[in-house]
Image (cartoon, rainbow, N blue to C red; front, side, top):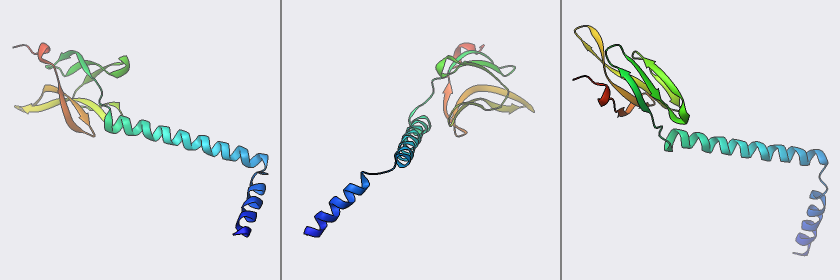
Amino acid sequence: MFWFFISFFIIKKHSMSLEKGNKIILKVVAVATVITALSGAYFFLVNNVWKPKVTVLEADLENGFATLQLPFGKKIQINGSSEFLVLGDWGVKYGTIIKNGKESYENIQLLRKGLVVEYLDISKFINT
């Protein structure tokens, strides 16, 4: 038991005399670890917890054009049946159907990983 305490103090004494270069390397590794952890937490939140709030500003269902308000104040115009990336796994696109051989647009969809999560409200743009 006595030798354990002596060896502990000897190891402690030598570990306190690290070179300056080793201290710098340890600090760089610590900062890199923190940055990696924070970016991992950010991407987890964006892909698993957060849901973007997308607002339809105007829509033309006849021609397939729409202007959308994305999170953080960004405005985009979508057209046709292409999917547009919002952030992370999220995107938006027109829901299309084919009538008499012609592609027709019936709604605007909020997508996550290409699957429909929500249909955006376009009721004020539909002419009845």
